[in-house]
Image (cartoon, rainbow, N blue to C red):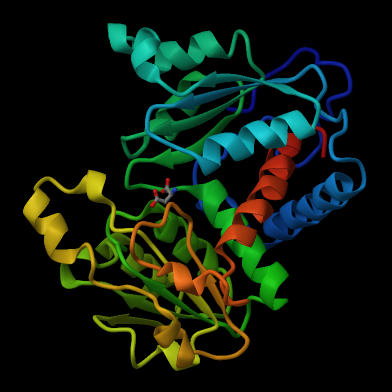
Length: 323
Ligand code: ASP
């Protein structure tokens, strides 16, 4: 959490928005914060295009602490830090760290912050980042807390929508797949509720969006329709956000098998969609989007990953007082 500091490391701006802040939930962000974050992300994008890497975070160290598998989140934070001139302590295999000896999360983060300036944390338990933030005096960035939230993914998702479609207000967003266990859609729907959008939530019955989030959508007066099929809404959709059925969250294999192929996006699905719309996915994809869709210009999921690096560069610079 924001530390009481008697002095600041050279060059840090105490009055910079987000200086020393944790990023635990998208609920921390106002529309003005989003505008600011995306403005910084644009600057990062331009700098990467111009010079590839620069020294904004030279001398800063990120601890990338991952208790669950990750490809994009961990490597994009690493790429982000390195493009900003900083360095990374990668802890991907907690089984090789002291966690396997029974160390608690508060002790692990209180140790790592003695070496690092910021900690990116992925953990299987909901609330793990909030807990870590209570104990750490350096910023904690939530990179996914079980079935809870994945705030930096939602920020990059929103940035993608703005970059690809130019606006957010007025759009119809359709989320499809595992809305129960998919933390990315939990964060994204919360973030989208700050805008004037319509939301379609398409899933098998047993994978519906949690009641808590449906309640929040209702409270924010976000027009929301819960559906079991995609056919009736694909034609009105501006953003089709597809998710993987989260196999690792099921307690029994049979329930997973029963729903794993419930929705598969194919070129035929998209033949009923608008010319100007995008298909997004946080990845990894298993079978829910056919590979033949990849060549469709509306398939934005790999572009989405690149936007993620710029957003994560922005967030690192912001919490470290350099933006
Ligand atoms: N990579 C995303 C996450 O960590 C989505 C997924 O795993 O399906 O939540």
